[in-house]
Every structure is written in C-alpha cells, then in structure tokens.
Length: 270
Ligand SMILES: C[S@@+](CC[C@H](N)C(=O)[O-])C[C@H]1O[C@@H](n2cnc3c(N)ncnc32)[C@H](O)[C@@H]1O
Image (tube, rainbow, N blue to C red; front, side, top):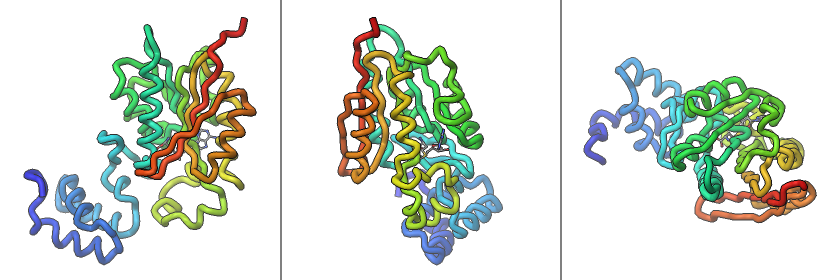
C-alpha cells in the first residue's frame, strides 16, 4: 500500500462486493474507486456500476495510458495497454522531423489517447485527430484541447490543406473480425460501441480504407502506422505494398502488440 492509498478497513467492504461480482483485481479496483469517489453516495453509485459490469475506466472516468490519465466518457473505447506500443513507435517517428513541428494525424482517435501522449512526449507537434463517433470526438477534444478534432468517416472531414502534408499518420482502427466480437469480454461487447470494434468479415475492412487512402495525405517521406493482430499482419503488409507504401512489421511480445509501419517515398513529385 502506498502512503496515499486508503486504509484496508475502508476498502474491505468494497473488495467483498467486487469479488462477489467477479472482478479479478478486486483489491486494486476497490482502492481506485475509494480514492476517486467524491462522497459516500458517489462511492456507492460507482460500486453499483462496476458490479453491474461497466468497465472500470468508465466508472472512474479515466484510463491510464503511457502513465497519463486519459479522460474517458461512457460509450468511448477504453485505450488498451498494447496500444502504448503503437504510440511509442509514432513518437519515435515524429521526433525525426527536423526544423519544424511534425504534422500528426490520429485517425480513429477514440478518446484521443495516442495523440495525447504524442503531444505530451514531443516538444511541439501540429496534432489533428478524427473519429466517426460524436462521443469519442467530444472526449478527444477534452483530452487534447490544442488539437483540431474532426467528426466523420475516416478522411472525409479533414481539411484539404492537409493533403500531402502529414508526417505521421497513426491509426488504431477497429480490426476485430465480426465473428470474433461475440468472443470478446462482455465489458467490451456491451459497453464499447460496435463501430469501435467491428473490422468487418476479415477484420480489415476499415484498415483497408485507411491504408489505401493514406498516400494521398502523407507528406513525402511520411509514415503510416497501424495496429493490427499478428494473424492479420501478412495481409496488412500486402495492402500497404499495393498502396505504394514500403512496410515493416514491429512487435512487442510483452504487450502482445503488432504494428505495421509504411513509409511513403521521400521523392517529391517532380
Ligand atoms: C479500436 S478504437 C481505437 C480508439 C483509439 N485510437 C484508441 O486506441 O484508444 C477504434 C475507433 O475508430 C473509430 N472508427 C470506426 N470506424 C471509423 C470510421 N469509418 N471513421 C472514423 N472513425 C472510425 C471508432 O469510433 C473508435 O473510436
């Protein structure tokens, strides 16, 4: 227990309720809820929500991502730990831009978690973000108030002045094959929007569009980074190659993350 953690006596009734509701990390969660609650009434409501199966992050109103607290509203995708790997790859690439702030697009931004950590890690970036879900757009605007956050289908809402200008285009788009959604934990199935999970029959329906249209938005030498699964990596690489991007696959076994990165040729059209 840390110095600021609630004493065990305060959390033990909460642990009992959470354990009975099937929460595997009942003690850890109980401490977070007790810490976060503004009043006993608030705590009781939070315990009820959590015991009823609402994701912990939605109950708390925030998710931890790359050590930051990302504000999270109900109905917005909970940023996953594996996506920290995508964010770190994107930071490393954006840091290579010399002489001016890199232009970054966080496409399918959800809460804006990836863009937020990029903004925090790098001195200056010009951050744009977009999502189709109004709740996600509102949430991302709270998290990265200095970014421009657009609402709409993939690239549709972006200003045309960004065409050919983006240095780093990062996308954690939905990639779960439709049939696999029913195998996901109920927290995801019931409390995250279907549009945040469903990647179509082979899981690549949205990613295919992200990748195919990316070269038109990337600056010469710019990069597209997408999260995918190990099983989908080979097919994802093929789509990159067909779209004229030079792909490589990077993995983190520690967090079970697979990212495909594709660079656009740095020769400017002459
Ligand atoms: C897997 S979630 C990832 C969210 C966020 N990038 C993260 O890592 O936490 C996918 C996001 O893509 C958005 N999305 C799905 N289809 C989209 C589309 N056609 N255009 C824009 N956003 C879309 C969903 O609303 C959801 O927020």
